[in-house]
Length: 208
Image (cartoon, rainbow, N blue to C red; front, side):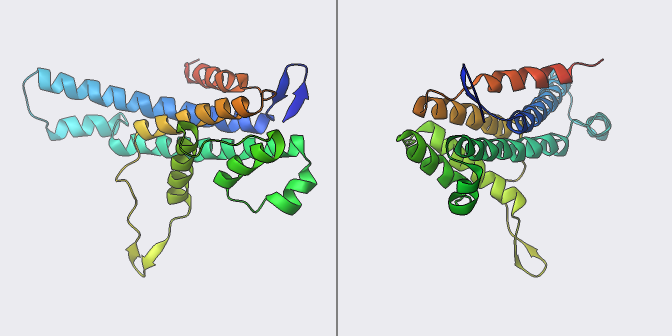
């Protein structure tokens, strides 16, 4: 983070991670909306789904699998943004050396509890919505990137069948909630980067 007259703002890396995450959330949402609109159109015509309908979804990249890919990217990059944010907060308030030598081995969720308490003498409510959103996001990220096999040839069952835009939306909500909660704990922290990153992602989605 960087200090200025308006408070403490995150480094560019945090904003870049979140912009990527939010852009992929918008993509997953668009895919779901267009697929749902096509489904309603089919049903309104009073006919059943055919192979031609399925081909239409595949050719236009509107399948559930097409929705899952950007949803996965959104979840992973939301978690990366929040991990970078809390590390950056500690570096700004303490030092990079102190973080690397004494605190960096903490799990990301633990950092969100320990760092504000160490720096601002205030702690997140573990029963609160912001903390629960963080816990769910990091759990889901770990399911995705720390995939393990139970036995040879047998994959560990994921806790979900397909990642959807709704779960990507929860990841976005976790970023918004965590940023707001960090500001509540330490008034010096700026949160305008959240809206700025989302606006940048929307601009990137506009053709031309």
